[in-house]
Image (cartoon, rainbow, N blue to C red):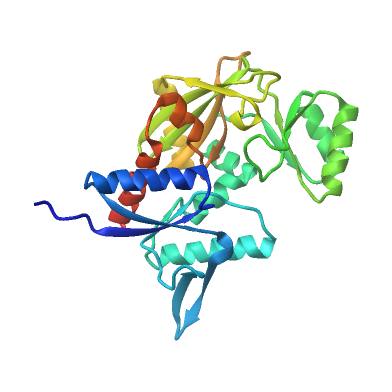
Length: 307
């Protein structure tokens, strides 16, 4: 009789009622039933994270669920918060990682992916083609950037996901109104040259060295995000697309990542728009009929084994 797998305690930073956490629970039950793994999942929130130093030794807790440090932490979501809260949360995850608890994805990876400017800078430094992008903090510079980008730009929140707060600007007066509002709110102006595309882009899901792809089509307008009304379809990734996806994930050191890629209709060149290190897999699971909950858990186990 084969020995039972050693239990692995995994803290998942996610809402326990969310689809993704429930999918992980389903996948963990499957893995245990077939004798492949025993992953004990606990949903935790960033607000429950606590830690300190006692007799010069670090301690970590996810209150009030457990006084023990888990075997591994999986960061499914990265919620907003004050600067102080966010800095402490990232600091604590980094301390946990340095103390020997694997964190998937790592705090540095999460920081690089949630910050669109930093993410794009890392991609460009790795030789990955990205759209021309300018980030500024004053109205005059923002208008200059708008004009230098051809007067046809996409403005995005520098921290944001799922297409929220994204808008296309093609008129200088419209741009001035938008930039004044953003600067008045204390935001930076992050704008990219609009990449003329066919109404679709690709979401490439990277888990370790495997890549899957889904084509996302806009039902109206130009935004393809599923959360904004786009529709997903099967797509067989090419060797070029697989290479770009793997290199993009490697640029931010992500073992689980969503890479958004679009083809410029004018040049035919593929450009990577961003990398998401807190990636969702609900729609791509449905479209491709792949058990990505299981794939994510197996990747988490690999992180524990490498530790």
